[in-house]
Length: 270
Image 1 (tube, rainbow, N blue to C red):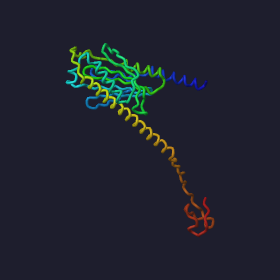
Image 2: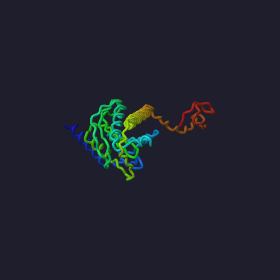
Image 3: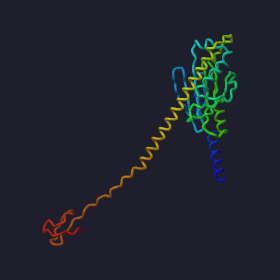
Image 4: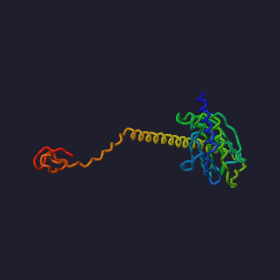
């Protein structure tokens, strides 16, 4: 009963923390933003841009790949679902994952997809993962949430807050052509994007995980060294040695003298 009570208090405190948390608005492109629970780190590799953050509940990731003019010139409105199919397949293969669910959704009237999958790429990282994919202004944007806790209610609240904070901040969104110009290269562009971004995100998270362990080990090592080092004992101040008076001839001698310098009599210090 006592342990159950403590657990309820802990969950209550965690819930209050999540509600009181101030999220950090981040401009991920010149036309879109999203909120992270803490300040995110930025990784740029050529055409790919990755924002990542972590708290006690989950990993939060946004990865962006800008397609070339040649690639986007072939994309029509009808091809967007094909792009998403390629991205989903690439993401699943990069994580050696099993698809749990896949649904089409609308984000501010733009077509997007949301999926849940179980990854087997690394035992150090969460297996359950959630992703949203949207194509805007020649950019394929992946929004990922990887829960770190079994507290389903808290995890779902954070996921909803993170996903729903994605906002298209500009009206200058290029509309794709309505001409029917379907090409297998469109699927390949999406597949390569999903595969590459999945690998980049995986290594970025794994690197941060390893770095955190290294820093923790160094901290604990320094702490242990401090405990093992005995404190330096303070040396008591040496008092001034008193003079000695010779009982035989009453001559005064220095404090360190054992025999009277005048008569040679053995001294007694006073």
